[in-house]
Amino acid sequence: MYRRIHLRRVTRGLRFRLTASYALFFTVILIGVAGLFRESLKSKLDARVEEELNGDWAAAKGGYLRIDWSAEVGKGAASWYYDAEDPDETTIVLEIKKVYLIADQFGNVIPNAKTKENEVSTTYDDLGADPPPEIAKRVIAMVNARPNTPGKTFWTIRRNAQGEPFKIRAGIAYDEHHVAPYYVAIGASLADNEKILRRFTWTYIGVIPGAVILGSFLGWIMAGRALTPVLAVAQTAQRISGSNLSLRIPTRQAGDELDYLVLTFNRMIERLEASFQQMKQFSADVSHELRTPITAIRGQLEVALFTAKTTDQYREAMFNALQDVDRLSQIVRALLLLSQAESGQLVLQKSRLNLCEVVEDLVEQFQILAEEAGVTLTADLPPECAAEVDRVQIERMITNLLSNAIKFTAKGGEVRVALNPLPDRIEIVVEDTGRGIATEHLPHIFDRFYRVPGSGAAPSPEQGLGLGLSFVAWIVKAHDAKIEVDSTPGKGTRFTIKLPSGGVGSDTMEIAAQPATLV
Image 1 (cartoon, rainbow, N blue to C red):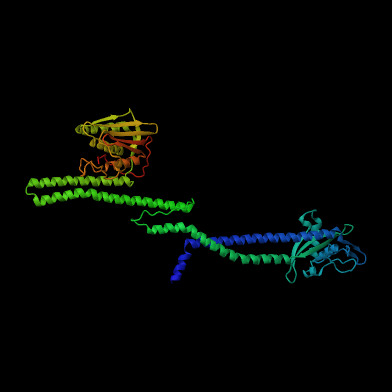
Image 2 (cartoon, rainbow, N blue to C red; image 1 turned 60 degrees about the horizontal axis):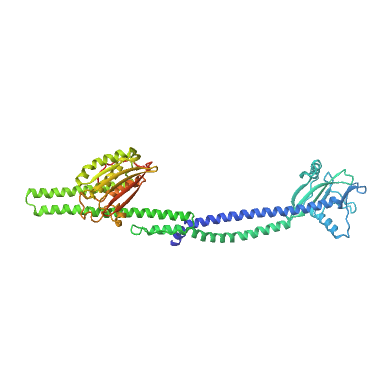
């Protein structure tokens, strides 16, 4: 049972099917090549026999054979003229007379002028004499045919009683006075040709199975090597879990389809790893940020439960708990909004806007907050600066940057907003003269819940949730823009957003736009 299951698994495998396909294709190719070679060999052997017969025919008509009227027999008779002492001439004539027939135009075999024997060889007679009507029909056809045309010659293949094949060349020869046509047929055995073809066929039949077996073996090895990266992908996929998403498959540097498959698989794992890391980070951030307000709420309620005695004390405890609940709600709303943004559910609703008007409105809104903080807020704007952007998200981005700039700038400091329209981009600059950010913290300021040390250990509504710059980073990315941060501790910070002038960005879904909120 196990062997049957194992055999079934092997036969259904891609390696087996590739090898079988290769073996079948190789077999068909070998058989096709064998057939072509056999036909080519047969054609060349037949051409050689025809060439020999044409040579014998030319020799016979060239002087060895003469046909004339014989008074002794009362009809045309054949005579052979050659030097019996000359071995070459004797050989040629004897070769011609091995398989031959000479008949008159009516199909009657004519005699030899000297021996009075019929001019037909025993071998030809074994093939079966040509019927006189057939000979007469051929003679008429050859007489009427144009010179140097195929109709002047008849080629046939005949077999004797033993099955031996003979190639027969039939034509016409005239008597000495060129009056009466005579039918002359000479032939040659094709037995040697058939032996050669048979030997070739059996040799090839013996070679093909060995070649197919060897080719299949090599195909099995090559298929195994070709599928090794695929098996590596499968084995790696089996080992992958949430705890070891760092696994990668090394490429073979061949630049082929398998390398492309490996690269695609590795990129998929990278995306999965990034998603898992994002989920882990989200879970850690949520658990960390929610722990503080929940602990505060619990503490407030426990204090009220065990120590409060008057209505005012209970009211104060409930008021403090409600403040923490409100902060908890803000965190949840901000996290959900940021999660929607990063997962692609929050999509830009772009329109053509004058950014000068947007920035001017926001600067006006923040003037009261700036005056309370003792900070000078100014705007350096051109007459007009048009761009294809999402108004709500752009307002959220500038709002977060302005809020942070005012919050971390000491009394007497300055915050400035500027728009710089350039040929290929629009620069939005928010800079302050605040306390600045140390170099080691700059790479992390766009991380969720990250707060630069010294900004306050305990989170509070005034300090924010640590999600504002995360929103800024997403909004910049969604608009295909770039953000640069320059900061010097004690001197201030400068945020520069380089927005494409064409407002490049892709919209794939539509949901209701969220109002601009300070997070």
